Image (cartoon, rainbow, N blue to C red; front, side, top):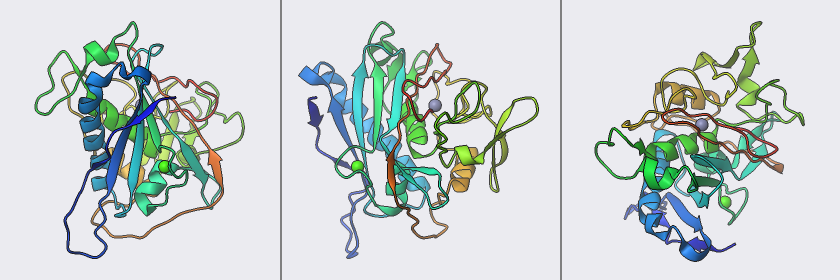
Length: 284
Ligand SMILES: [Ca+2]
Ligand SMILES: [Zn+2]
């Protein structure tokens, strides 16, 4: 398992005089035996750090937060996949994201093991090679913005994930993520995320760790030529998940009892995201 560690890319390397000035960071490592896709490392690293930084900047996050991402390349997926590596049961008994816990508290529940893993499809679809665009400035109309895809993946790693079966809505092993704990279905089988801040938000049928409204975490359409951002609805939902908006104060909150969680997502179709669980366990 050749995991090549690129030099950690500090995302906020403040040369601060403050005695508590430790740089938050997003680090990127590659699982790429033989370095087959090494020509993409720089572009992917920059985009991953930039995307992760947007999450760290949006919510109250501690100076010691270091979100460590492992990037892989998968011949068998059409687009991209991602998973959160570790979870922790919250005091209320719901599985909380290790990546989210580290953002908020600096506690790294799985030590040196990466906190999130994102894979890019490199097989027949040539998603990485032909579809994604990495760069700054305007996204070409015929391309999907790689940084936006990574921003979306971070959204799953930090909170849009859970264990419910897409067809039944039931968690097969009884585990519920924090996101799951906010979910309910109406009499017609439409699922909603409900929270004090976000209100009732319709989730995407068959793909319900996404919403139907326009925005970064929508499960309906991920448009080419578009740069996505963390929007008001995303901020509201994350507030309901226990995150605190940057600049509004707040403290740390952690919880005990580690337990593994995994999820995977698969985007299918041109300009359309369809996410499919690839592993037993947490879905996104
Ligand atoms: Ca870790
Ligand atoms: Zn998604």
